[in-house]
Image (tube, rainbow, N blue to C red; front, side, top):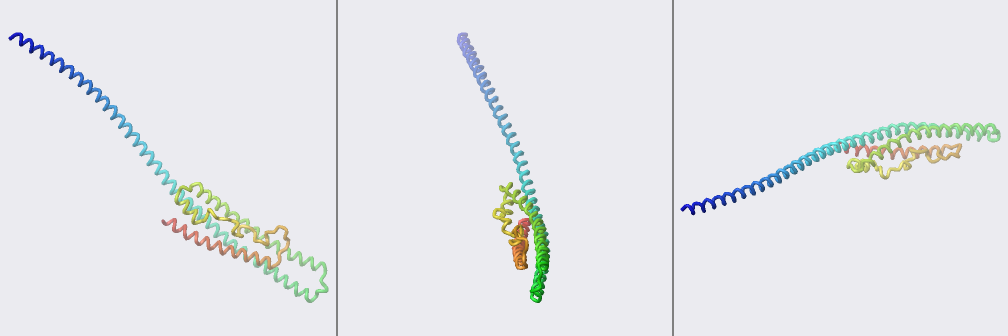
Amino acid sequence: MLVQTEVNIQELKSQQENLIEQKEQLENQLNQFQAKLEKEIAQLEQKLFNEEQIKIQLTQALKIKENKINELERRLINLDYERIKKLIDKRKELKEAIKKLQNCCNRLEIFTNKERSAFGFVKNMVSVEDKISKIKFADKYTKEFQNILTKYNDGLLEMNKNFYSLRNTVQENKELEVSLTIEVILKLDSFNLDKYKIFKFATNSQEGTRTQLNSSMMVEDINSLKKNLYELKSELKQEKKELKNLATD
């Protein structure tokens, strides 16, 4: 009986030692798992923090881009309205120039007709002094005509600055849809200032070697300016219409 009891006690001790060893192994495994889990949780928290920071940065960048687009839209539209306003002002000045040129031409033509009539009656009495006087008088109107052209041509050329400013702004922001829209409306990619003679002297008056113009030459210049003024008015009307539609979209 005592022997059996001793055996049972030994078995129980052995089982107890095994249980203690298993407990220690389980505790070690649990500690390792807990450390691994805490590490993964820390990594996930850091990842979430980084993603939140990226989200904040993207939101700020998007807001900045939206503000930039809105500002650019306003700038482009304001630039072009300013350009159109100056073109309209120059159009009025050009009308005034054409009127002055026409008056100058008319006076020269009247003078020429009077000279012809007088010359018909007294052609045998025309002196060298009369011829010189006639040339000087004609030169006076030629210079007046060309001075008027020069004055208003210089003013018209100032409009080029607005055109180049607008074109540069569009080219710097070509990735934006509004830039492409305005470029199409204003035909900035194919715009040629030399297409319109209102941006330079009319043909006859441009030749630097010519010192005297007759009335037919002046009429030709005036008609050329009138034609280009009409074309400019038509384009301005169309641009204003399209830009108004763009601003209300």
